[in-house]
Length: 357
Image (cartoon, rainbow, N blue to C red; front, side, top):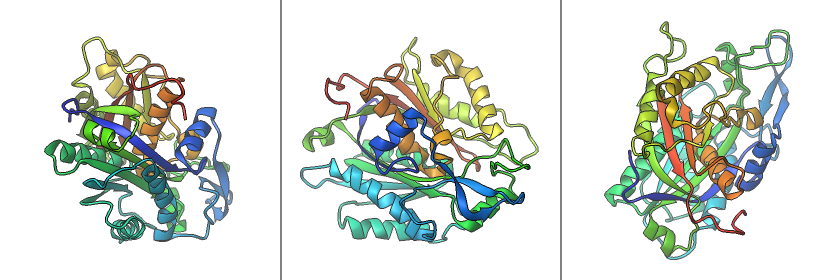
């Protein structure tokens, strides 16, 4: 969906990751290539080797269930809220979560929304949860864009959180042959389970000006697609769903303009690289250097549903810090269940000297 008329702006961020307790330290660590991987203190793989994970080190490994998700998410919301001053506004909340899976509390969405309301009573109006995994944040942002365009809300707090570190979840990942390990039976095409939370406050120009917020990027478009040939099916993945999301996000891009930066959720699984390759082949002329993408899973592990706000933060902060390759960024993600999302971000003339944070 196009956001060009009127545009929405990325106005505040928050994060909790294995490499940082806020968005700025997390982005700096990812930029520096700091690795948050460690050995699990007691979980071992079938080869008898400690499972390799990426965890938030300030949260005790014994903290599980809703409490672990809350300890990741609530400080990230607090961080984004700290930038929001002024009169009350009609704010929505869109929450991206992992899908139902072993080790994930069945009541996770309701429990977290109740925790958020208790922490910030009356601050948010309508709240929606998107339990779709990696692309859930894209679905949440798309819903926020539509609600703002319809005038039902002035702005939206897009929140996302995930943790793969429940013992039952880790056993399930290995049983699905998705665990990247260090033992003799190492799966080179698996991923390192991680955990994180990300928050992005998006709103229109009136909201931004009224609350004295400094825009970090404009959200030009959100593209949503669906892939029928998902991992585990007999048919080869050809990237049709991701191509659909790319086309929708790039539809408003001016002729001759190219994407300067790509941030994505590639994590070592071959199917993600395959579908990106096919999608780029179909629209490679819109990317300045499609192979020069940023995949922070090599720093903070696979963070599942938490990806979208964190990846937008890396793109926006990269421009504020002036180490990006240009003002246009594509942020994409793919869920194992078929959902695909792509967001076009545009940094603009609001970058001024001394705004690097």
